[in-house]
Image (cartoon, rainbow, N blue to C red; front, side):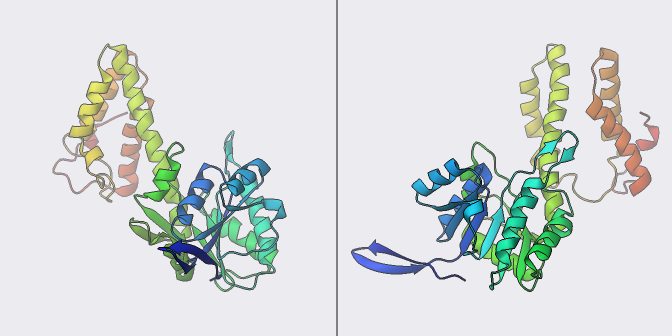
Length: 320
């Protein structure tokens, strides 16, 4: 790794300390800045790259090495992390910002003679890192993945308001790796953080980030659907939801519903989901999420087979 020695005063003595790793962060938005600042606190040297000159200036004033991306021509780090926007416009995800950043990186990598690891922190659909990111880097740089450079997809779980605190105290780190060597380099960065670290494939890491976010979205939408009906009937939604948070195994048991047992069945869930849907229809409320759940659960039985863990198979009594 690149040698970077820092001299500081320790009880009146000068001590030389070697930086563990040099890490470039492309994109200094709230994710990129929190990432760089957090990694930097564990004796790594951080280089920020961004297209916004004002943002670069502020980072420089804060004591960081920071460059306008177009003016950064030579790789002087061991790792490059990409935290650039991947927005959705209309029905389509836009990857042009990431592709542009990758192309510029690959141009610099062309003349870099040391092993280097590229890390995708941006949220991208499954297959993007292997089918789009890797070919861009290989084609533009003339380098070979696995031999000349490593590739990792490492999802971030930062909340915008508390991004810095979330990064410094991660509850989980997932490393999607092209190969073992790539993943080991990135694990070294996260070892000082007191957090579980898991490894998986590139595609599994990409999908996991979407599962993470979409589950949160579905939960919010479901409770909003119920909230509308409860408030319409003059009921206290907050009281019911807080009681549910304490009583519901699907909330307090983190692995509930994750195991491959097939569709939900048994003497309670099928009849109660259908009964609440019937109530909503009679009362004039649109329970679109619940209706979709009942419908999809019946379809899952055809695909996955019957749930063999329950004593009563009740689904045969259910219609949408």
